[in-house]
Every structure is written in C-alpha cells, then in structure tokens.
Image (cartoon, rainbow, N blue to C red; front, side, top):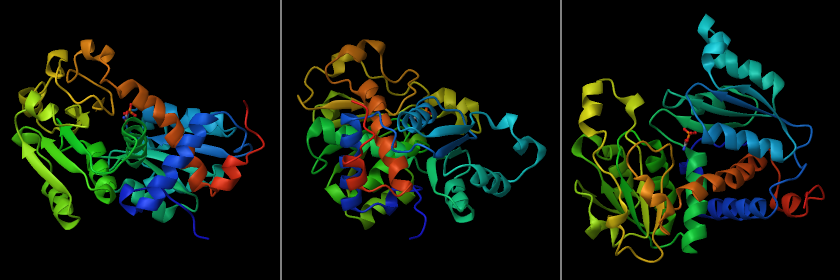
Length: 315
Ligand code: CP
C-alpha cells in the first residue's frame, strides 16, 4: 500500500470525511492511549502557530508517540540555505510522520512528493488548512447533528483565509448554501467561486454584515483579517476592523446557530460574545485534539478496528 498523506481536503470523499468524524468521536471518548508507542511525529513549523502545533503535539503525546521538531525555522539550517527538500529528507530519517506548516502555497504537496513518510499539511500559505477543516467539520457535525443542507456564513478575510477555502471544498458533498461576506478587497477568490460552480455549491456574495444574514445562519464562521499576507500594510489598515460581531447582533439568531472561528481572533468577535450560548470557538479548538488524533492515526495506517479495539486505552 502507498504511503498516506493528508495534504488537501479536496482528496477526501464523503465516506472518508464521515469516517474521520467517527474516528474523532472515538478519540473524544478515549483521548489517552498508547496506540502509537514507539512512533515519532515531527512538527515542522515554518510559520507561527499556537493551536495547530500544540494540538498536534498533544495528540501525538496522548497517543504515546514522541515528538520532535521546531516552532521557528530561524533556529534550523534553513537559515544556512538548506532547501525544503533536504530538510524533509533529513527529518524522514528520524520520524514516522511529518506535520508541516509553511508559508508557500503548495509546499505540503511538494513535501509529500519528496518524503518517504506521510506528510500532514498544517497550513500552506493562503491555500489550504485541511486539519483545521477536519476539526471544523467535526464541530459542525457535533453541534448540528448533520453536515447536510446547512446555511453557512463565511465572514471576513475570504481572500487569504485558508480555512474557508478548505471548508468550501469539504462541504461540496453535503449540499450547503454559503454566504460569502467580505469587503471587495478580501472577497472570495475567483478560483473558489469557479470551484463552487463546478460542484453545484450554492453561494451568495455580500459586503454588508448584519442581523438579517445572521438570522438565517446555521453556522457563522468568523475569520481574522490575515495581516501577515498583505504586502501593503496601508491596505490592511483600511480593512482590519471591517466586521465586528457583538452580542446585540445575535438576538434573533436560530437556536441551533453556532459561531465558529479558527482563531486566533484579533478584533472580529467582541469578548462579550464568548459567554453567549451561540459561541463555540473555544470548544471548536478543543475538538482539534480529537480530529488530529484521528488524522495522525489514519496517515500511520491504523484502522477503525485497531482503534476501537485498542487494548492500550487509558480510562
Ligand atoms: N487555527 C489555527 O491554525 O491556529 P494557529 O495559527 O494558532 O495554529
């Protein structure tokens, strides 16, 4: 059997997505096991991260694996000119799987082509963030009881926000209606609108963010304006506070409506919203642990049977 990567959510069938959700449920029931004892997981972060790196490392640790890696490429031989290819080949000598975040779009795909071990994409530039997408799907499934026929508002930086790009692709199997809410400077790129048309995904574009839209939503997916992707910071200053979600905008939201955000947040959700029953972004990040336990086990070739009948479960 060929090696198994987790590079883009576009590769996952409907059955595979639902299977991964079942695996995440199993890990939520029993997050602590020794099923990966003897394995080494490498986390290579060429861009900053809090949740993705720490939840992957926690996932590996809770499954009994050991973790090597770096959170800052400045302390590696990349600063001496070592290429990404050579870095990946070296780490492949030491680890059983690589979790990598890189600022170049397509870097994870490239790494998967040169590495003899599985590559997990932890975000590549403004392109994809498939592990975030798995935890988003798990969060949607947990809160809505289904992934089918949902009204999903994507709000904020739809140009550079890789999590929304991945979510569109994953939801193609589930008949969603998307509302893309962004200022024109941060509108959803054409390639994703073309993707929607090719896959019969319904979408409506808006520039106004108001109660009327919120009241129709099942999922309100807020995003940060991605300062680090702007070449001109004056442009960032113009849009940085374009939409700010406040409690008084949520008075007539549907009962089932949940607010998601991949985090980190800057100004786009007021702190007062954190205790609103619609807020779900902190639990969403917790779901990242279970989704990432599922992803690591899956790329390492562990089956559902091996996981559900795991004798090493720590209760
Ligand atoms: N959601 C997310 O990717 O967060 P981090 O950048 O902190 O990993």
